[in-house]
Image (cartoon, rainbow, N blue to C red; front, side, top):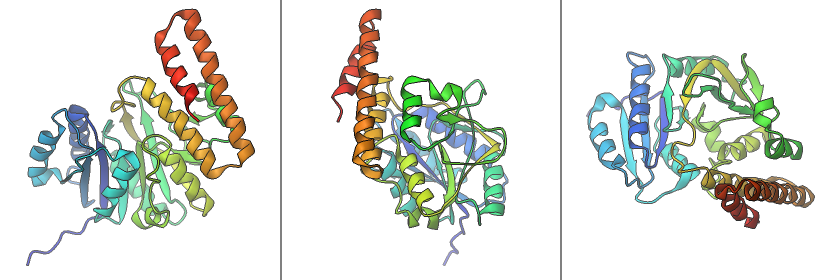
Length: 299
């Protein structure tokens, strides 16, 4: 009877209509971990893609050197439910949630993994420094969405001023990190009962790490590990992400905040939508008008 290979790290990727991007991501992982001592597996959950991803993943998973476990859902489960399915199939003690639109630079997974192992008594969730395609820093550490943070996000370009999301130069404890790349232990994730499957897309990591914070789990940002994140590669256009952010804010506040806070949040979201609609009409920008008219209707 063949001995089952022990797995240290399970890398979980959700794929949806990003055939070439996903393939580039997988190749960058295997390139990054070439001759590594880390025993790893890559679990790819394909959310019923229709762009040729299925065939590509079937072929790619046939080569055992690619370390791929390919799971086809036959329906779009979304981000949270898809990742939860990945964890259920994971054999590793450690879990790395990784977006399909990422490119691993150099030995960044090793750097992240070994730093985490050395500090796992005080660090429960760890994220790297995300970079844009041109290698400029991408804000990927953030503050929880209190009302002042929401206001900064909606009206003050909070990311630009570091009021909402930022990219530290030193290792730092933060409120939450981007779901594009999160390293943790499987038992920590399971203690939180995974991602909330009621959230289809956007705000899953915020909700998860908010719940983690409530039970004393720490979240850290580690800039020595660097990963390119193409961002929104699996979302067509800007309308869908904006509407999902609106829904995400409302879901998060209904779940975690008081009714007064929820009322104030709704006022801020409606105000943002009205301002955007007015600007859209002045500039004759149909994208702004149509997007924020839809956003205004969300309750």
